[in-house]
Image (cartoon, rainbow, N blue to C red; front, side):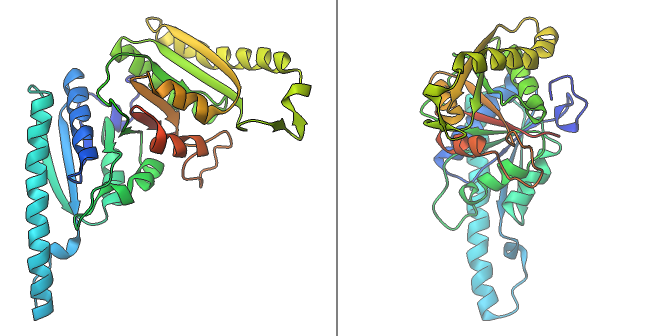
Length: 302
């Protein structure tokens, strides 16, 4: 999936969509999304979702109480959208901003929005309070959204130096993530680091045998060839991107987490080697969206 794809979320008119909840995490996401949209000549669409009971007509004293409470929540949500718009324009004064206040399930709302977005952006931190927030739905959205989802997180989420780093598992289901990483590196004029760890184990033994007893050099040569093969076609499509290949024996999450300390963006696939359709997120992707030290892009196979 690249800028040249015909998928609806990649067409030139598609906006960058960011979901907010009024938290510090969503503020960082709005700023990141605004700067990204402006740099790519795209609009920014900010979405906030509240409980549907807010629109129910009161028919009893209890309903009146609920209505008043939800009306207050709706007012707070409208204020959150106004504040988010201001934050977006402060980060990127030239960006065109639209806002949307919806009712319903936040995860479903954002998943539906992702089908028509250039990128769907979420903040990593959850809000505390009565307003529906992304903390309870972030993993569901990341798992089931269409196209690419960026989780803005880390100690310096607006870092614009350092490489784009992509985790390569060697399987065909990882191809969209590789393509998206090349496209991002080209757009950012940055180096691309492709990290491939050929064992999902963290340490110790492989199939009951100590790593010290295995011909590791032989495995490494074979995996380096596999990685080169996976990257070759994309390097031809993006000749301007300088690529560094890193092959590790084990520990994909640990190695990618280490790279996230200096990367401006970490790109991973939504599923692991097996690529099972029913699997929410690959274990490595699931862990990184919660622990990486830079924004994480999760790319779906569609």
